[in-house]
Length: 292
Ligand code: NDP
Image 1: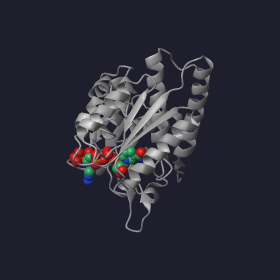
Image 2: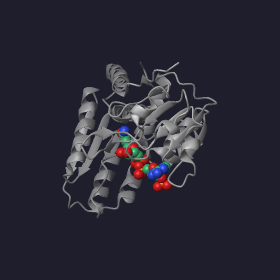
Image 3: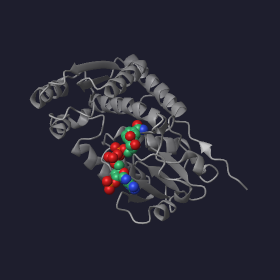
């Protein structure tokens, strides 16, 4: 009997999260708390980065957050950017600080990311937050994309405890935190990467397969166990301008039990999780938990 692969609708899931967050912001404001604030810092005039930041600010405003935007010229030095970050660290009205990447080459990106106060690090890149996630302590601010992937799996009702999970990709932004989150849900986790031997066989072990590679449609039918759930983080543009994931969508139909499409899967969740992290930071800084 042929199976139908369920489409995991990231757009709808992200909208649900945004609605929840808006209700939460309204509830906090009704209790007399100040609105959560998200500061975005954009250095230079890269058009793609400008679009990402605009969408993040728009999302923040729609949820009732205060959006503070700091555009800086390409010529900004590392010291000047560090001074901006320190000012935002000291600003009580700012709960989350997002420095849009990539930064111009002459800026010391590592120094800048390390300078963001850990309790305002809504990207989850600071070593304190990485350590907290690895240690499984609840105070971690977790990178937005893997947090969004986990939320999709949880919303889909995927049983993670005891499941075999394979994460393909080991970046600090996606692969490693994804593996830590799945381990935190008691999955048995394998991280695969460019040196992994017999990748297809490793992937076929997975009940949950997460692809975070950045290679168009590299995972196909041979990589997916019958009935597996597939989360495709990849965003790749083909020669004819089409956006595709790391997974060959057509090839896994009828094999995977459920999968995220590209676009419309993981992508929309990333901004929703940034907004969630800002509310988490706001709540912690003011000593409140979710009220709705
Ligand atoms: P990186 O380039 O930092 O990491 C890619 C990983 O894939 C590396 O660990 C690399 O292994 C591994 N890899 C490369 N080639 C192979 C191969 N042939 N077989 C197995 N593993 C391989 O990418 P990111 O983690 O930043 O991003 C991954 C993808 O996710 C990209 O397409 C990116 O655009 C997308 N993305 C999407 C987001 C969203 O919001 N939806 C957000 C962030 C990223 P090694 O370490 O050995 O080099």
